[in-house]
Image (cartoon, rainbow, N blue to C red; front, top):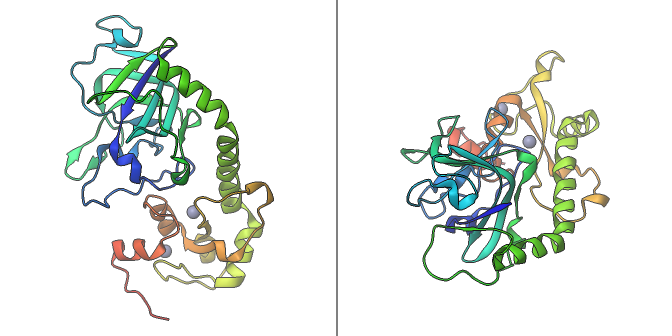
Length: 272
Ligand SMILES: [Zn+2]
Ligand SMILES: [Zn+2]
């Protein structure tokens, strides 16, 4: 199996949802939009397309392929920021020539080109507060990407780390399942509508009749939390949104920040 270590320094500030909701990460805090902002967002074709920092040529022989190969599969890609593990892909496909993101996404004004494709089930973004483990031995020098295999020391370190990290991964999987289940549950929808009324918290549209009210959905605002095994339905974790606003909110960096979407859409905010 081959390994690729990618240094993506802006990952240090990514704090968004991972896979369940086609999110983007907490980009833009420095005023600059990193090209890897969609590295854990699901594209419309159901795959994740990852940007890798620039490096000369696209010679896949360093990943066990032959010179001239257009793609190679079964690669583990590890993302680090300041040496800390921030996320990884398993069973990824690496392209020799970067491809345009299928959804024609842009970072600022420039098109995003991707060198990796992965199934969302094989991609894992380490929750922000768990990005505390520094890859060992810390690779020296300036590099955008490094190549390795089972004989590389940092590969052995990563595989051991992954075993220790298994419980975090399991709890994160549970959290994703729980969030999706809550948003689809009719009980949660009723609870939220009873509490907040048939009104979109973002665009403020409201309906009384049952036909038009079908547009309202329940949104689960908690992005990360511990102990999803013992989670109960809490009405303050929920919001009522129309289907349009709900979709748009899931594209925003912070799933809990409905005000940010209102500002983005120039919705006049009603005080009180
Ligand atoms: Zn709305
Ligand atoms: Zn939602």
